[in-house]
Image (cartoon, rainbow, N blue to C red):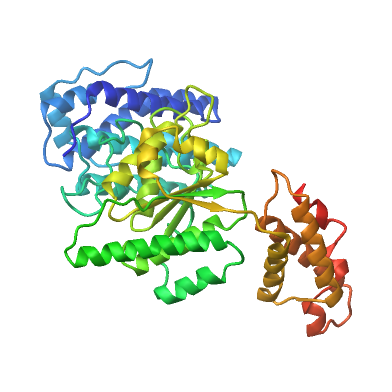
Length: 488
């Protein structure tokens, strides 16, 4: 069990979280009523949380008296009074200020009430973690209360928000249990907590990917256009991991090895695609239990105010457990000029997860070469955990053309002979004129999508287009006069 948080820390986290939410309310009247009524409501909920574990300790009195936002009276409850309040807790009820918040959301088309559900969940997790752990019973109670608020929003017709925080993700697991998550108050709420905003992109929320054999996955890697150096590096890494696992099974000593990776290169060079294959390959050879990829950037990890980043990052880590956490433009976590930036807090949480979950989590950080080098050297912990670098070179003009033709074929379009030749020349020119804004395969996809749009406009004018008409991409459809400028 982690060390319990001090009442001072709990008060700071609570005050900062509640004050920050109040300041973001759209309606001035709602800010007033929230400031006047929220503390009492949250203290009632604290009693509900603490009742789940069958009793309280004297330390809970200090925590209870610390639950107030700046400017409000400080509670002076005694132990026997708090004991009676916990034992006499009547159950959760939607508060009046929340009902008014919902009404205001309906009038303005805003989502303050949806945001409050996350803030509410995180505050209750804070209360649960005051003894250094979050129990299954406490998490279940928190989720039931949050669901009651969500249901009220649903019935009223408040616009949908992002998926809510799941308190079960922060339950303290028994010591030694595989994949035990970092908990609130265990390097979590102690450092800060966040209403998760900006959900991870990628496959973290989906079911584990369909099982594919190692041979199939390696064939997919080989089939990627270009990236010869990357393929060689990845294959060497896979061979190293496979032999290491065989040595373990044979009872032979194995040297320590970090599986975490740094992908360096310009946008559109296949970093995410390769990361997804690596996650599946690691699963196929038994290194990872699930093999999913969870892709995020700074916005998916860092919060906008104190005390919220750690939980936001922990939620992402839990989604990635058993697979790969892919952090794009990772250097953005540490190159902010503001002294109040919380990117470093996200880095610390990730470093701790890399240690705690080292048997079932791989972290891949990616971005521009020079900036990624600075990022890794910005923190000794990063330098010690990331020691394998893979460089992604820009695609050549010939490779860009190959990617474009593959897009056409995969989507059921056929290039005319003159269009194919003209496209090859145009992509050679695009490569020659590339600059720091060059998007590689992303630029190729943009060209393809624009060509499809032009083709649709052209074909729509035909009286009875044939199957061949629907599939044909002409030189006119490609808009070749615009292709060389795609890199600018």
